[in-house]
Length: 218
Image 1 (cartoon, helix red, strand yellow):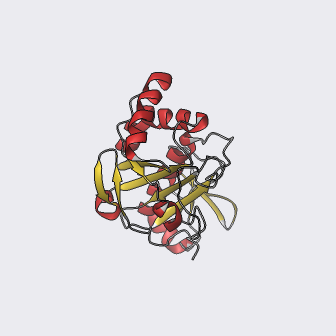
Image 2: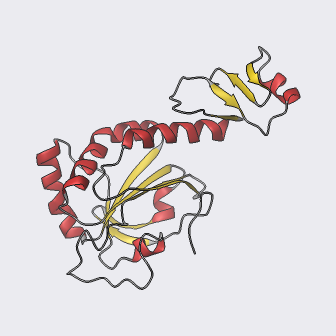
Image 3: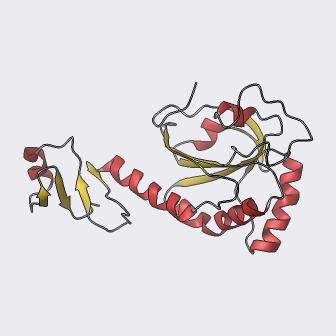
């Protein structure tokens, strides 16, 4: 069955570079960013893992944890981390899941269920394993993205989306195109004008009745 936004993120137990985890227990009351890679020692992914290592403090500020996944063993990941630190100038401090049996990749619909793990698999065999999932403290999937192998992911965008998701979970607003933290927001369509007057007594700009623009709350 395909996964959709607001589905419960499938739980799993796995070995990582920081020990064995139960995914839901590992998330706890925080947010989680699960991002996957088709193979260790691949060039685009090396740059991605390094960049995530550099900006991990930004996720920490947002009560979010990072966890990577790749189709090789934990031992291979640990060797790859040395290359990442050497070439990208950042040490990987978040865990990396070893998924050489493809169990997690299949669980998250990144590969067909009948795919078989073997030592001969290449990144091309696993090219659909370049996904990002944002999972909330409620263990629900809030975002899913999958990128082609040759396109490095924009993890600044993942930070931006996380800001939006966390804001709109707390306040009855939505964020417009290209929104960044601090920009104006839109009063949610589920809020009628009477309720909006209580929430925003100073009023709002409304170029159309359904487009009610206010300053970002909070």
